[in-house]
Length: 81
Length: 191
Image (cartoon, rainbow over all chains, first blue to last red; front, side, top):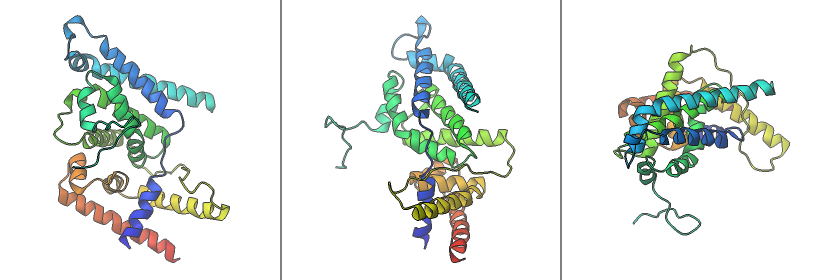
């Protein structure tokens, strides 16, 4: 009985899938955010460059990139409406 | 010795944790983790929010946070647990910013046999929609542990780690959710 319910619920939930293009769009946005992290000031050079850049600019960069991503998605939805 | 996955070139694919420690210096390591976890994470997020657009936004937030806070992954647990904890926190933040009202499910196409008969497809679509609706009606805490258990096959301990609950609390939530779903779904089948 329990196994049947588990299988039924799992099967229904596995049907969720992102729309075509979402994966590629998000990866592009993430890559751009990472590139922004790489333009850190000279004192952040070296192995810890990413760590320092992340701590200084990562949150702001990630937040701004996320906002740009969300804006672009909303623009596409607006044009499609 | 446990079996390791190999790629098309015959080399073992790096474990998630090995990749995670390279993210700081190598975006391609992050990109590989992204490819591994995008769909599982999206399914989990989508099961907790009311529509595809919100699921996309929250999923994007999770990966941006995973990228910007890569240095905080200390390899004390699995990368999967670390990532899903970020997702849990993002969902909680989203819930706190929204009022909890009735949730209307969008139609989601099922992954079914490539060529089902029209009758089979109609029945499958209806059953899948019903099950998703019943899951959506669960209280948020129960819905979350159900998703982590059924979608990710997380252990009780992993669910407890992700959701910051005790193992006992997770067991109770899971038991209550299963009981309610069994009652709702088996009651429908009997009619």
